Image 1 (cartoon, rainbow, N blue to C red):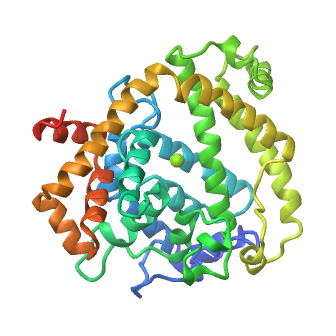
Image 2: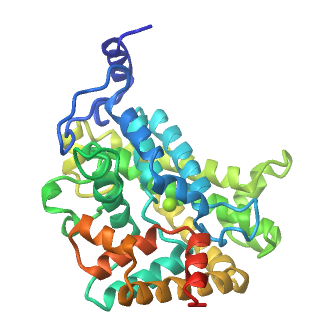
Amino acid sequence: MKTLAERLKEASALLAPYAVPIAGTLGRTFPEPEDDTRFPFQRDRDRIIHTQSFRRLKGKTQVFVTGQGDHYRTRLTHTMEVAQISRDIARTLSLNEDLTECIALAHDLGHPPFGHAGEEALNTWMQESGGSFEHNHQSYKIVTLLEERTNQYPGLNLNREVLEGLLKHRTPHDRPKSMMDRGPSLEAQLVNIADEIAYTGHDCDDGLKAGLFTLENICSIPLAAHAYERIRDRGTSLRGSIIHILVSDLYGMSSKKLDRVRTLDAVYASAEPLIEFSEEMTRKLGALRQFLWDHMYLHPKVLEKSTSGKEVVGTLCRHLFSHPTAKVKELQKKTKGALEEAVKDYVSGMTDRFALAQAEELHLL
Ligand code: MG
């Protein structure tokens, strides 16, 4: 068996000069001894997978409320598809695969039950007290504070590169103070795009399976028509073909931009994204996204369930605020925040099924 140092040398030799190094450079908030056999981001990945929040992703809506069908994506299977696409892109571009996997696996941990409807309900709830809810920030809060793995520090004590990747900051004003002078790593940028590639691909798949639109309908959109053209004779999936087209465009555009970047510092200093689609593909993808909004996310079959989920989330928040349970009080004590914040942390962590069961048990439905 090779030593960790030998493997570190081998793995490092495969990285581009602008990749985040295998062992990272920014470190953890609370210093810890290194592991004997795993690289730092491998440990972070393992910490993320072994959280309660990660396991609960299986019970959270992606588009269809869980239980509407066994074959539709859940927040967990979506997350796994994002991780797979991210790793492929990272490997092809000689970037840090372990880091992209960490960011991808943790990127939706903060998503509430009932998908975007649940997110809207929580945002409305928080706005009443002058706050807001945004799932990326909740993912950050989960791994830095809410999850417990030791009594030595709060959260998971992940490397800063993973934390920064979760915040998806795009502009200087939404960067936390500690990160003011840094833009996102290429690994963080690519997970952001892999998320969009994954959900565009799998939503076409789920929408077709659910009969929300036909192949003919979706092929009125040039990107889908092109994707179908490629696979018509082979009979493989439209999802796979869409992903292939998007990823290929991303490689073409990004390698041109990356030619101008020589170091990680140059990536951090870059004011513009370096991993992105061509302008033409951005336009084509926009048209397909619009189709999915019109024919899927706003389809009565999808809306009906998520709208009732939205009411469940809002009702639970109001009730738990006026009648805080032991669990809510415990969360408030731990986070030393306001009561509405603890209610938000509790409700956003629920699975669809648990939220419904809670609402029923409290006679709120
Ligand atoms: Mg996502």
